[in-house]
Amino acid sequence: MSVKWGLIGASTIARQFMINAIRAQEGGEITVVMSSNPERAKVYAGENGIPLAVSSVDDLLNADIDAAYISTTNELHLEQALAAIKAGKHVLCEKPLALTSADARKMVAAAKAAGIVLGTNHHLRNAGAHRAMRDAIASGRIGKPIAARVFHAVYLPETLQGWRITKPEAGGGVVLDITVHDADTLRFVLGDDPVEVSAFAQAAGMAGSGLEDGAMCIWRFKSGLIAQSHEGFTTRYADTGFEVHGSEGSLIGRTVMTQKPIGSVTLRTAKGDEDLSFDREDLYVRSLRQFHAAIRGEGHPSATGEDGVWSLTSAEAALQSAGSGKAVKIDPKLGSMK
Ligand code: NDP
Image (cartoon, rainbow, N blue to C red; front, top):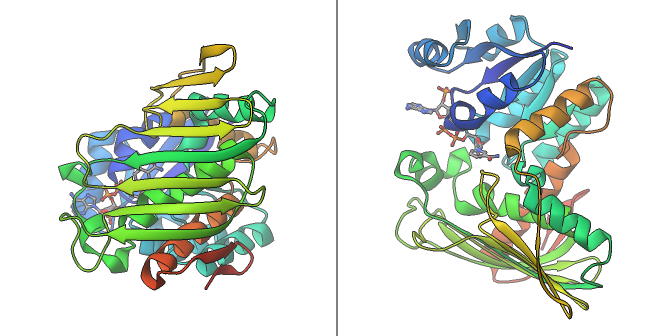
């Protein structure tokens, strides 16, 4: 089956990972790229071997495409996704789906009404490490999960020190950038949903304009499990990790909150330590494979639109909590609630 893609946004993530992931699929083709700047569109198309460069969403949607990948800055996702859905194109949208969970719910409703596939590009669900932890928990290897810890504070590369740290109106800040991933990965690995969050945020010297560049969140899940997550742009020397501690064992993932299929997962029980083996497939290639299958009517994208609503509702609740100093309830049907 051929799937012709249009790229909405001449972005870094598309250049670094998604163009390759699309082309790695049988029948996966990129026919057009859109940048708001015609010159940038042309240069980007030339550098990446994309036949057509356009500078409006309308022109992109009128081109020969089946699906649109949206990786513009966050404030643009809603309008662009609604236009693509209206044109009957399948949509894989970057996280966060929108600036508010109410807008994300609009996208999901529109996609459902149009009968098109909508996915959220939460790459970590496609990591072998996280799938190994999810399987170990689901098969009871750590008994009853009690607590989880996520270490996802990184150093934002200089090339990305733009809108993320300067533009609140573009959906900058570490919570919309990284906390959304942590909320999604916790839901995926634990097979559980967050119901409440309490968060502290900081501006540790990199972000301006009132944006946060560090956050620590404490989450309560439906099952009673509690989790903590640390997201940051300014910690140059920190490692990443993901741990789940249960009544009969612990899972210790090291260097696993990353875009690459690296890291390790140790299962620690009364029997000792066991290194879990897991597949090392490119995360984004797997994401695209699932998406193409969903277009064929086989299953769902690895993270659906609804998953994107969950992660954005969770991040929104974390931001509210950081602002108010109070714990905030999470309900994806209603948004976050003080
Ligand atoms: P970029 O800053 O690279 O691109 C975002 C937009 O900025 C582009 O659409 C482009 O606008 C504009 N832009 C990019 N480079 C330049 C430049 N040199 N000069 C002028 N304008 C430029 O963003 P990212 O690729 O880092 O992020 C894009 C989206 O993807 C965000 O929603 C982000 O949250 C998400 N993301 C997701 C990741 C994941 O693993 N799931 C990882 C990284 C990002 P135009 O298209 O109009 O030219």
